[in-house]
Image 1: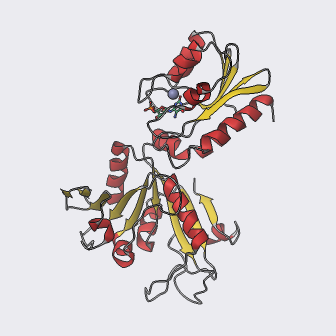
Image 2: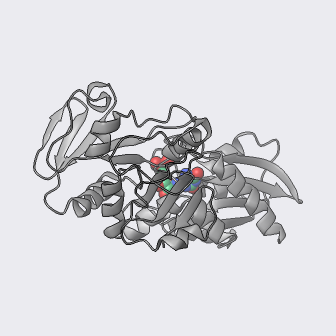
Length: 337
Ligand code: AOF
Ligand code: ZN
């Protein structure tokens, strides 16, 4: 690793501390270095709160004049919920700014760097770029592709079955897998299930077993079959129910009509609402319909220690199943694209 890469790695490690708290903003970390020593560091910790650069300069014990600033995302140039970070770096008279990824947000996109260069600050970009792209993949995907990042999650028995053939419910989860799933929920902006799962499991779809923000709850219910006594409907948290034709708002419960091509309509809805990521948690029909429509960016298979002996093998009719088996037998992440 070069010196620049070592400090950028520190900035990326700091960025990750914001995980579960900053969406739809990206994870950003910042390290201020002079004479090979860190003189300040910070990260973006809360949506709507101070940006990483502001936090890094907050507790500075000395002037940053002539220092190098490592920041995992291009410093912003716009007045959003906070003032432009590029202006702060110029005011502090730093000599050099090293950036991991450019900001695809059209409000920034290159303008932050331009401003730094105009102030005759040396700028370097692309340091550990693939690592940065990975940690902020939801954010980048949303801005570049115009639709949310979609993670499909399902659980499987130790002997490779996802459900019983007669539809009888099985409990696959234990405390550890439950925490893992709740952590994933904090990492996604929205969580989605099909109406059959909603009616069968009466879930809460929150993230109570992991610190961080709970996702926006969504149910796909084409023919308006969701039972009105479910916790999702009777509790105080918002709920979005997507149907073909039925549309009504009752308090914070929103029924939204998407027409016949529901997944296309859902992608358009999420784009318009700035929803950058969805965790799809079943059931099998819902998982398969996303997969078949090409709306699967990542698949998480959680391996249970329960044995079923027989049952249904996969939620995906068309997935080349061995591909996942090659990765190993424990919990598996498959990056589809
Ligand atoms: C930075 N440093 O730490 C972050 C940046 O509404 P605001 O003011 O919080 O602006 C949000 C946008 O700023 C966000 O969409 C992204 O483009 C950029 N995020 N920029 O310089 C940071 N989090
Ligand atoms: Zn900023």
